[in-house]
Amino acid sequence: MAQVQIREELPEGLKQELMPKHIAVILDGNRRWAKERGLSVQSGHRAGSRVMKALACLSSRWGIEVLSLFAFSTENWRRSKEEVDFLMSLFEEVIQTYEDEFTGSNIRISVIGDKSKLPESLQKMIASAEESTRGNTGLHLLIAINYSGRYDIMQASTSIARKVKDGVVKVEDINETLFEKELETNCVEFPNPDLLIRTSGEQRISNFYLWQLAYTEVFFAKKNLPDLEEEDFIEALTSFQKRERRFGGNKYTINQSII
Amino acid sequence: MENKIDSYAGSLVASLVSHMRRLLFRVLSTGAIPNHMAFILDGNRRYAKKRNLGEGMGHRAGFLALMSLMKYCYELGVKYVTIYAFSIDNFKRRPEEVQYIMDLMLEKIEGLLKEESIVNQYGVRVYFVGNLNLLNTPVREAAEKAMKATENNNKSILLICVAYTSTDEIAHAAKEAIEEKWGQIQESSKANGAQNGEISQEKHEGHQTIKLADIERHLYMGVAPDPDILVRTSGETRLSNFLLWQTSTCLLYSPKALWPEIGLRHLVWAVLNFQRIHPYLEKRRKQV
Image 1 (cartoon, each protein chain N blue to C red):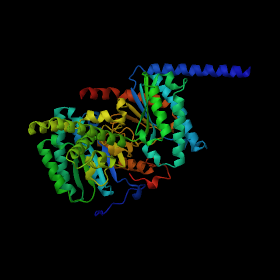
Image 2: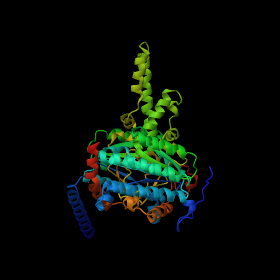
Image 3: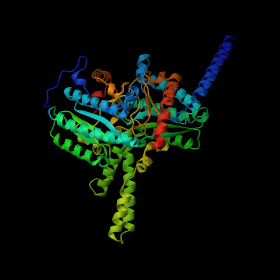
């Protein structure tokens, strides 16, 4: 599908042909940021949500095809009821804003994760935003709420099991290609991130995408999410563009790699 | 006479170094020690190029580094060590390189079974993890022999991932789990053939769901707990389709050193970082 929007010129040092197609971000450090400043956890999350929007806008302007944001993990339910309730209402606010403001930027919104466990009002908001931005052809923004890599692999397995039971798929046909099509990232053209950025300095994946990160370049940003600025995003992209990706082969096989 | 003094001095130094290392490990052991460490052995070919050696020499140097590192890990008290020896993707390389690596693996697997090898010294049980049917017969048979020969060892465990990728492992585990469930459903259908249709339907629904435990049971790596630290050498920070399922909460460490250059200092640094986040991760684990 041809890109309709006009791409902004990239900052100096970044090459257009080396830009990642899909960037994923683990949004970490809101609470630490708030604690450092003696602010409430809610303030931290709100500040973090502003950066989420900025990342989406930058990605859209620079012609990124897919941006995944890890907003809420299946493991985050263990936080206090107060914090979880706040986050659910913050997500409603955020998605409403995106629905209103992103149509002009041709951004499409999808939410991945187990939506059935979310408050009804949030589910309705999500359905509305997904519907109204469905025709947009620019950046595809994936917001992961109540998502985890293991959850995604399990739901794919369950879906395939159901298809086997219904006779749609034969057991002997189950392979990596078939499996990948069942993951929730099947809604985007480029399901596997080229670059993963994790804020707050922690060096782990924390059960975000698992299958999809097989060949992803990982960049650990030391700053907490609310402190992340455009120059940090550029630093991550610059680091990405310098990397030599071999996909298990070597210099001679790079051109033949199809991932 | 001089040679005798040299070798005496040499063994004195070696003994001193070993002593200091044990002291260092005792200090480290005042904190938590990782139960399972995994390594992506990257940089052998770059090392060979750097030192103007033949490419094969890089892999051999890598093997020596592996032996040292295993020794340090087991001395420190790390029970499980997993290494990414050969990916399914690596079959894409030039046939000569692939053949060289297969021959080297055969040589080294046979070496592992010798009396004086590290496997016997540290009571190591060896597992070969991956889609072993993709290996040539001599290597596969040697691997199976090594697994059989060490099956009674229980002090430490070495998992060698060969003909492995994580996506292959997961798809394979899902396929096996579904096949097993499907077999159970078909059997229960036959058994319930004469019963009330509604009851059979409910039983069907219950049996059909694939659970997490079903998948985990069929993973090649199911014989070990999840790693605590994943180390990838040569400065690249990517997972390269290794242990994707198992490293979801694991500490990732990517030193710039090429694999043959890996040493004690890297292990110590990794463990210190592990000790820093361990209390937080333990607390979270208990909350589940």
